[in-house]
Length: 69
Image (cartoon, rainbow, N blue to C red):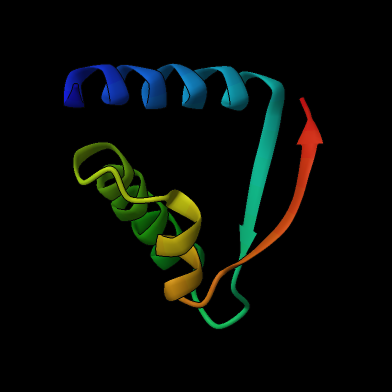
């Protein structure tokens, strides 16, 4: 069952990421730190099945916008 759930999460992520661009902002961090945090949260989302949004908000980021690419 866990494999099916993982596949569904991955497919959903691919479909959503193809339609929109998510922009996270935190004025208190450098661009380098922002990239590091983003990478860490993406890995957590994939490995631990944790929501990307909760990881980023826990690090002080806010969702700026979601726009068509």
